[in-house]
Image 1 (cartoon, rainbow, N blue to C red):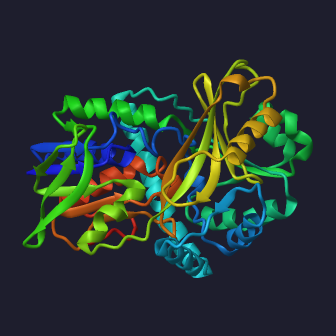
Image 2 (image 1 turned 45 degrees about the horizontal axis):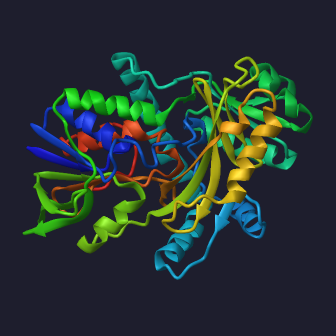
Image 3 (image 1 turned 90 degrees about the vertical axis):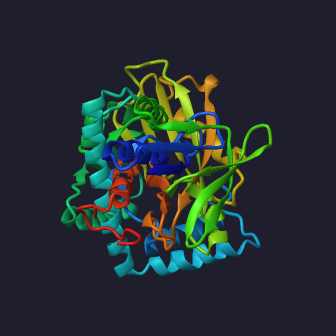
Length: 420
């Protein structure tokens, strides 16, 4: 059997790895328009493996905050309305998912997949000894607003029942866990800490795993645009590509797996498969660390500005913002300046502010934040996409789950997999 995987981010490479381990295929080919794996949404994301924050954006508290933020020039969320029907369809469904029963259901699904994926990542890390600036110092979430801090307790209580333990912290406890936050101590009101969460460089991990896939005879076709899937007699027979010289070519396979993130709906729509996935652009800024003792090691979440902070070796990554503006990856100076100013405010003596690297990526978000993983209505066509801000957190588990599904096995945790 031959399997064609479309996309080489964390989900494509993870899927390739687990399919190669399953023994179901004697030939696997990974196809991508870029020159190497993990150069798109997996490239410079926030770096957190955050099971403790596997909670849906779609809830009434966030909806009310979003309405307030949208009216501000500088806010964690930017909405640029357009004539795109898909944009409005997504937002209508988002509001429906804010109903309390939907929130609890979606949170359970997200936590189940995130916990499973974190365990899978740990096992792979121990087995393969991949270097990716990994830190297992937990995630510390800090608050500067008392009302928001108290509201978060309700979510923490729900998560505790689902097996995720957020420990409530006083200001002094926050500083004890991460002394680098001393510069903003006076503005803090409390926080939460989850010691089981982790951080690491998704790009480094994905590229190293791709190298190991190559050693196990997985083939890679980079610099090939994926034009369309060819459908005949109830099945996909081939994928039409355009190479870097502009020539068309087809690749035949028995199984096709789509892991194209925000671009998955575009490829599948002509086949009558409608995915409610919309690009939620996020930004990051990466700073060289110039004072190792004063820069934080614990991964952080700033709940006021919805930013995450991850120490990646001798670099500090700050990421955040949600920009609903279609498929443009152009940088917004307001969002970039927010990242820079936040870094200067919090870590004034530890980072090199003159050599910052900015990046943006299109996170493929479903209205519920529950990703779409499984078998489509076409017999030999599968999908692994729609992970939104938790693509890195859910990456290894989603890849293993889709490999099991292709192999005729049902993953052993509760989740709304397609086709099962």
